[in-house]
Image 1: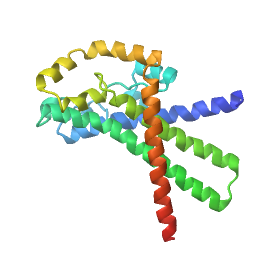
Image 2: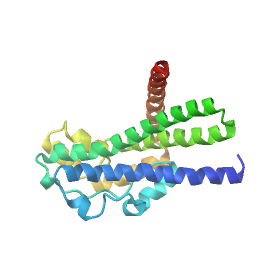
Image 3: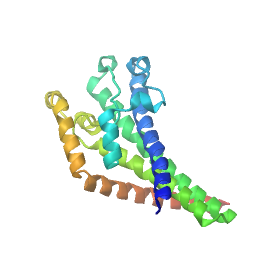
Image 4: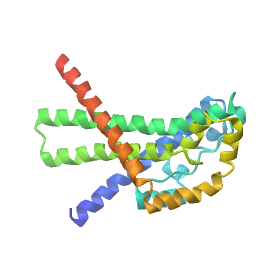
Length: 222
């Protein structure tokens, strides 16, 4: 790939990553708001403006390693009927939104493949669209799996908290500020790469199989 082509793909990847990040954070704020917490709305964290959500270190890490984090959405669990379960639901909303975006991307990949085949679209045009949807799916799956790692303050630690005793859960949360350093070190060292890569390949393969089955059913009806 020449320099122009490489630069073009970088310009495509940046908005795809920003979309994954923004939807992830907005989902946290949306669920917290639905649970009665006005904090995300008051602080403007329900916005689709990427600048509202970007964290300097997380953004740099995302550029260097392909995965990172945004500025955490501030929530007030005092508004929840059950603080620990409420935090888990808010945490789950982010990875779940990335899962949905990934599946939509795979579905659009399949849809455009069918349409391009029917219209006899050139392979060069099909190649561009194929890669946009594939990259979108993989980026969202990468965000999902990274955030499900059960290390504070990642979402996985709060989801795990639903199954821990209050004593263990709140003790774990006390080390949140120190675990950020651990996450950055492990990310830059590539320690997460195998976990995330394996997870992305697994879910992407399952989604492709599901979409193929879906289109076979739909085309069989037509």
